[in-house]
Image (cartoon, rainbow, N blue to C red; front, side):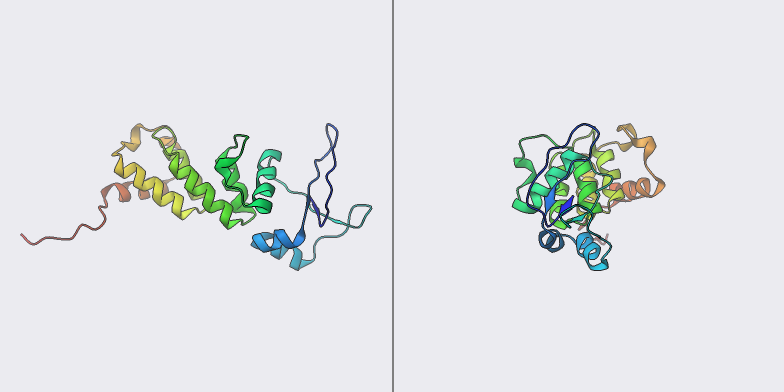
Amino acid sequence: MVIDGDESKQVGPGEMQQYYASRCLLAAQSEFFTKLFARGDLEPRDKNGRYVYVMEGIEVDEFETVLRFLYSAMVVRELKKPIDLTKLLHAANKYRLEDLQNQCENLLAEQLQPATCLSTLRTSDQVTAATLKRKTLDYIRTNKLDIRELPGWADLSRELVGELWASAVCIPNLKKQRI
């Protein structure tokens, strides 16, 4: 990504795709970029003296969605191209884009179903998405799912299994009654 640029460039096969973005916009929307720019790690790398930062661990489609969101605050569900919300959630978490992370969490929670709820729970744990984790646990409890029969049960960490069991037995707002 070229920082403080305003033009786009087509690249050939095997070359890196370049995107141009405003440093001010990135810093205003993300703690990650604020810290990156404050450290002064970036040095001009292109012939025009613009800063270049290589985004690692994110695919082109997800990065384009992140940029589109940053510039337009476009709701992810309105995108024309289908996108893997789990990958987008990981990117939002990595680059500390709270608004985008919240939006991804809410959309993933809306799409919960028995076949995917444990993988969503695992993802929520990996990216510390407390809201998504709570909604997923509520989904499992509300739908009275037998978690041992769901896909991905064997891959869960001990901590998540403990949270699942605790969630399944816990009934919120139940007051003790005297007999």
